Image (tube, rainbow, N blue to C red; front, side):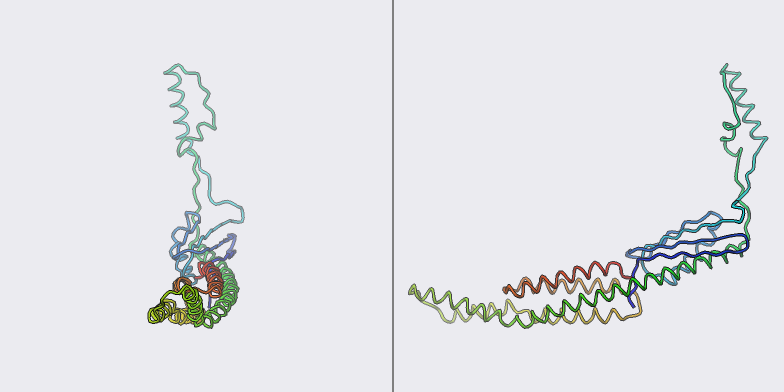
Length: 293
């Protein structure tokens, strides 16, 4: 089954007075690269989240965003160290008097000093957090997987259509291949006829050797066989129940290699036209393959 690396999913869970929401998005990447953004008090659950993601995703760049809210909207309690604030105030006054500096010490200025005002995070029930995160993440991953599979099905249909185009062109190339030598022989004989009219001596053995040399040099039977074999292997790989993106990319490279060789050996305009069609289809397939898991 073909799976795309592009997708998005969102999950939400309410446990008591707490609401957990998680968004997961993925794009194509050579390996599995996870980036999880969440409140610091949840960092102890990061490893278990990564494990859940790995169970469903093999390859791609995955970004996870964790949001958390309580019923009253509060995530902690503001604390004020009045003794520390008093110390800062007296110190500032002392500096002003010592240096004869007129100053205006206000509450806002003192509040900006370190540790005068701090936010104490509430201790949360780990079981509640774990339940909320697991439920929300499971929902998000389920949506993400469904979207990736849906995108994969669309991509697979397009790939099959492109492969049909390639098969049609290769079939035409295979039929045209034998005509290359005959076409060359006819051109050569036309040229020889011109030379005979000019009363030049013609070496028959050399002519025959020239035709044989061309036939050997322009033989594309092996390339056609390999190209067709790679196409069948590509189709077979599409039905595999495992990540296939890298393998398909390799097969496309080999198909490009064969069609380029056919192009270099071909002296037929008709074959060249079909080569262009094959290359165009392979380029479309290559772009699609880059987004397959």
